[in-house]
Image (cartoon, rainbow, N blue to C red; front, side):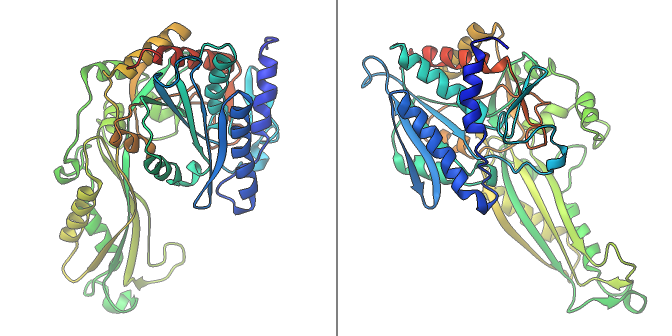
Length: 444
């Protein structure tokens, strides 16, 4: 550890020690304390900031103005979240989750990679430029404490706020491998649904009625067959609107680890013979459907019943260009069409978010890639994310491109015990963030 790194770690540790678990109502005060820490940091750096109670959820809202000609300077919006996942199971942590510790070149602690540590990189870089009197952009911070529970308060706030920004920067992602930076120019959306199939008034004796009466579990499986993939692709109604990746994106994906290795590293098995070879296309550029859970009858006890009710949760991950309402309607239609005659099928939409897409050729992305190349010596790959980040399409609706990147690694144990961030990436991430702000000074 270099001498200059220790003050950074001491400062970051203050934030990491706050157990701001949004999923646990008992820690609501801790979530607010984390918001206060972010706001206080911005104020101490010479900016204005406050904690806004947005319908019961604390938001840290602040701004550091450009050092010169602030009224005409570009505006960079920074989003990050200060809530964290619960640390369970505690017995698998090698050090207390809310007491940061350095071991073997890594900084350990809950939230160090997702997302307190990465948000800190952006805060510290802006503060440093402001202290030196060379901050070329206005940096607006809009941070929330409910990202880990799927909250939308920050989206609603930004829509209500109405102020423009030239670009948004989000450090809440990872590198595909060490020292290989990446920008994520697309995020998948989601439609989450509950399917309920009823085939009678009550469960029946399978010996007396089996083979003659409808079995709800059988009916559910038949209904779900209407939306299952064929040869790795969903039925065409569920692919409506798909925008294919660019050739530059595909070229970058080919440089990544093979899909067979990625699956094997996770202890997973390919879905079909083509799945490994198409891993990145399928997880980033194609919609996917998964049955996330199902229930019917008696799966554990020896009970010879013919169930009258069966239920399942399923989700469709959407890609850029797809309409969530249209996809939900298509799922509902296909499921009902595939169900056997006599089965009553209900499909309930539980949650929904559109996919996000950033033009990889936009000036903001070009300037950001140039900045990272200056700081890191490597030009970032253009990748897509298989996950969902609702703020990205919300920003897109306002015409604000998003630079989504980060300094976590696949083995940073995000959402798991022993979450960690490479120690060297703390000063390196701050340096990259500084170059971003400097580069964005030329946005018009």
